[in-house]
Image: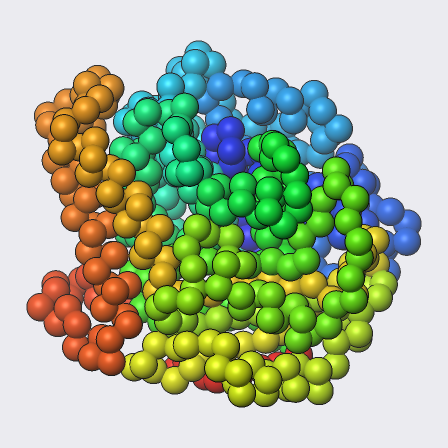
Length: 479
């Protein structure tokens, strides 16, 4: 038995986290008050990964919800899920006085440094309530104040206090297609990226720029709302945990999933693709789906939920999670379908892998929930490590440089303790992110294994969580 503790930080983190819990309660036959439906009692699943049972037999999320202002958490407390979460696990430090971090990374980080001991009383209690905690998942945004600043301090503390537990994040990147309401967003993003590179074992990148494009172009939503985007994101998170909650033949824990996806410690930024997306607000025709149709769409260069194209660069590893069949099973997807689809993909040369290691392409079949109405026979999620992610990282780096070279708006940070002695923190963050971009570029070369030999040995050490072993890059599939 392995459990995962979910931490939701900031407005964005709590909004997408809330949608995620709505998704998986439905999939497991749990009502929004935690009561299990009678017909779900005999279902063979792993509710215990994300839930525990209270003394009254209600299922309670293994979750801690953090925010510095009351709006979103207040909405959860007074909404349909008001009896769902453990009320002791809502964390809004009194010292913030409900004012939030003002979209300032420095303010969020400083607030965390003052209140983290109180927060870790909650986290440690939840950890102690687990039989065998595998790790943490953090839901947050990299661009605001709380999710980025408070979340960054939290990442440092989790990595330090629980070095042998897996630390995975679902990190929402800002929409960079137009002007932002948060003028210091580039600073916040780069400072957070430094912590994601140094402290996390895996970062699932969720790019609002791409999500808006998907909503407008594929779902024909004229004016996508944040609720629309949060629905997309929650679908991805739920699908990415499906093999943990509905065990199959493989990939039944975080370690097995991540060990095949992350070939080198620093390059752990993963992109996703999901198909078919549906919208509750737009009437759509339902097409016939197949394993090949789903895989073809997942591998399309512009299908990824990041604003880059996989037509350039190389995959280092790829995992496709296929959900198929009717009520309660993956029996609708046969092994022969998968092998035939793989053969077509190879014949058409639809995937370019890094030149210095064997191809790592895994397909696993996850059961579908019998409690969810299935509009499509087959759905799929791709988790991939692709060198083109550097393009997104470079966009954030370049936006930072435009402002930092002019020393614009630095006074907002100089008011906080971490920057009271200067701006060296910005310089260190820029160096870290630039080095990460360079490493993703170097991964495209056959001589990558010789790249960076002059780097300090501690930079080439294993991931922060020793729970994740290295992988031998098997070229394998298994339904």
